Length: 488
Image: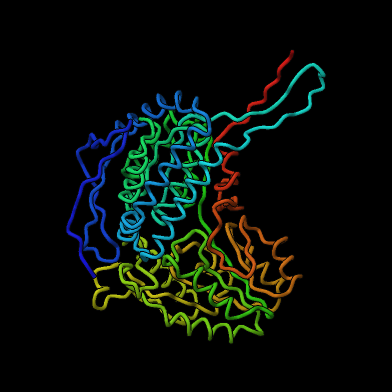
């Protein structure tokens, strides 16, 4: 395991230039796999810095929106080409900042490139419809107008994909962007912004301001010069941002928490179900909003499933993502590690049985990182805290049921509704799951985590503001419909 010694300071990016914060203060970014490894420093920005970025974005938007969709798309194609040449560099920084394995961050970077190319192509697709008018001498149709300046607030768990799947559609539809990335992964975002800079995207079209959520995040939500806010993160913060945006009449989009179930029926392929459960629950150390956290298993196959799950979980290797033998990395920061450990203790206190894991790992090279074992509980009921609240870590709660109907009732018995999965070979069970599961993403014989970039993504209930990201659905948030009536 290597320790990197460069400790570069990364500036904001405002109006086409790298700019240091007016505070002259920086925030240290460390590697959660080895806290002695300082990745670099990002700006501790002020309201003054944010105002400068918003002014630049507003000025640039007037020219940017006048470009054709094809012209805007050519810029996105160019950014994608530059990113492709820098896959290794970007993936390496994402790994050091967030803790995921290098294989995962390379895959995520490739996905970011694909998203850019997808939305570059959207610049050539239709943006409206012809509507019959009752007036035979008139033409009526719809077109779409950009919103203006879009504020983008992104989390640390997908430091490449989430910023791009918000920025790319915002840009292709004629908006300009001010982005505030999570400070834990702000250097990765800076590397992405450098690709926009090298692609000669016009000054002010894209701006990055780093800093605290209480200053820059709240500033984006309340700034009168920002017409729309798109946010991914915790439900508490998201709701505050939504309320602040609503109070001033700005459009907002929130993608928040999940408490995602997997149902395993008595006719399921258990090996497939185990593999899907482990990948969904423990990849990225469970730090996905779509991660599996509840596994609801019919009683007739419960013991067999449990034994297979335990056997495979015990084979997982935990360590630094730089090591090719590592399957699962650390929690992304100390606060998240402590949150996970506190939920594990809560599970024990409420009477759940700890089957495996549950401890912080501190031996050898792991002593300087935020590592926790993959953890499995059983004898869990749906009212326990670990079955109701999002943990955002590698913790599974096993629940035993007698029927698919009971499984569906328990699966829906939470405030969230982001993703859900069922493993079954019975078409009746599959259809019941599709029709009755209260989730924005339902998957059959596949893990709960993951969605293809061309498909709409978002949740039900408390998981989102009920708009959708990605795919063609992004057009609904990033544009306003304009109805045109032409009389000859």
